[in-house]
Length: 219
Ligand SMILES: Cc1ncc(CN)c(N)n1
Image 1 (cartoon, rainbow, N blue to C red):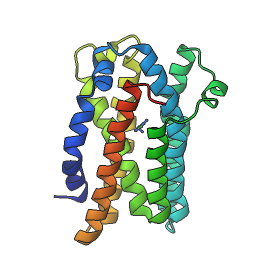
Image 2 (image 1 turned 90 degrees about the vertical axis):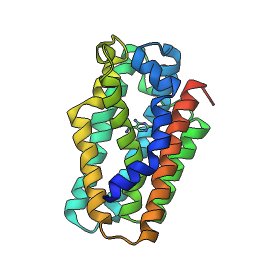
Image 3 (image 1 turned 135 degrees about the vertical axis):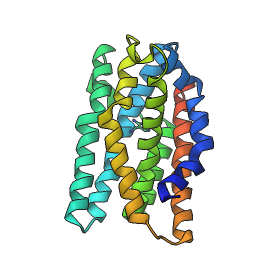
Image 4 (image 1 turned 120 degrees about the vertical axis):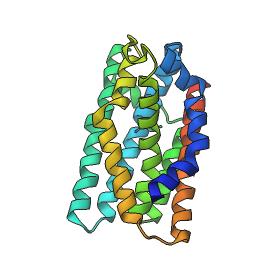
């Protein structure tokens, strides 16, 4: 098995809980109350700024110009790509960016982003990659699974979120992270792999926490 296949298998029990979470199922069948999604949208917009900072640490920690360009492109993909989904919903919900910046990150949101930033500051490129990979990959999987539900991608409100994360653009960006992770960690010691798996599974658990936090509208 490749490194990424081992990581994927290690996180499957948690990702299965994410796919079965009522918040995620509510997006898939259109039953999610909009106020829950509104809460999630605000928290996730704040989250993505820190997520972009983790990618920026990849630039700081790289000595290979090609790697710096890779991480720089991903910072742009978030700030000017993925966040377009959020800005579109903000417009539909009448939320200004000024309002978003008055919102405080919820406890579990701050815990997640500070964990990713902490392991990435302390570690090297590999730690940066595996801390962002659970985020990127779990959403690619959720997007693909929800898009296969009859009518889900056509839902007048949640369809845009589903098609965004099921898009070939998002999935090819995710695949580039998977490929780079396998390349950088190929032949690593079992001790190094275990350290990476611990980070990947921890971030997967934070992903599940983020859905639960959004379902319960937690402060
Ligand atoms: C909490 C979270 N995790 C992952 C993603 C997908 N980049 C996201 N937008 N938000």
